[in-house]
Length: 475
Ligand code: ADP
Ligand code: MG
Ligand code: ZN
Image (cartoon, rainbow, N blue to C red; front, side):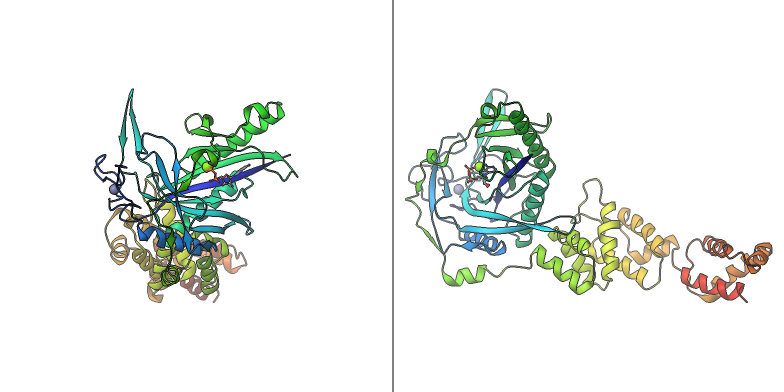
């Protein structure tokens, strides 16, 4: 009877070499306060200069989500005090952001999809970090001034599942465009979830709570579910007005609950005004045109894989869900491995073996090696079963596929003579069963196949075993 309404704000750190308004490096994990200068420290008289790369990456993003990219946008000062914000204001875009009105399509497992509106995406600078040690707090300003693209969605999502699908698609788009590392653990992809409920059928928006501190897809889903339950319970208990207020809440991953952190300002409170130190951003036509040339995106790649290789839509969605997997797959195809087998060996067999923090990028078996394994199945050198053993082995040992096949003695026997030799021995040792088979007990054929495979230690080519057994037994 309640409908859930979710709008998401994502802060994606753009992967530029230097900060948005100065030349300090954006590298991660350096000694505190070493990547700083008068601009990002907010010293009086220091002047910001816009990093052109941040504009280029924003244009690519706007293009990817079918948005309007504004030729002219402006930077504002958003005024508030925080120890990690030395200027006393954050430079951000307000009235005219660089990107306005786009969309992200999310795909459900049943094959249907839904459009989620993107209100805007604007450029801004990040703040520093407060580090608390007991009763003492330190401020590290290395992060102050790193470029962020804040991507604000419409309140179009109706469940925590939809929110996660949206975030995963957005994440993939940023990675395909290579404009952000979008690493949740390192904080280069941060999400705030705005959550409200309303009686089903109602169209107005009710009071939202904004949840911060969400650093994994799993926690985002749990935090939203918790918040929906909290608001629904308040409604049913008649304390909605009292308990559901516009505020910022923090998600506690250990207790699995959200807690009030502070009241939420309306934007008027920030006293936004155009930053007098920065000119409006005007994108020249040639730069706009150049930046609108973007690589193939997940949805297009998925459709192309289905069409070009005849693989299933679902498999194509899995393969294209991350740029790393898509590249891995396309490398396998380029190496000459078949599309269907590449799908299975990548999405099922290799994926299952990527445990203990291994990823496709750190996998001991790269795309070329996995392709050569698939090719050995396809040219009949080894059986699919033997290939699993080979894969297990090369995950642990730095050795080539062919050497492994040799070493483990898994080469498939496709030589008539060798197989016939085994078959004849089995026939000779089981004359009773041969007689039963010839008398009509056809089920026994499986027994002979099994014996032959066993005797060959699984290396006999199964199709040939079948043919040769038929020849021997049916005559
Ligand atoms: P702020 O910075 O104050 O949080 P923004 O406009 O940047 O404001 O973001 C507001 C976000 O909250 C948007 O994603 C929007 O879709 C979402 N939102 C607004 N109202 C509601 C609501 N009633 N329920 C759920 N989400 C909402
Ligand atoms: Mg917000
Ligand atoms: Zn600096």
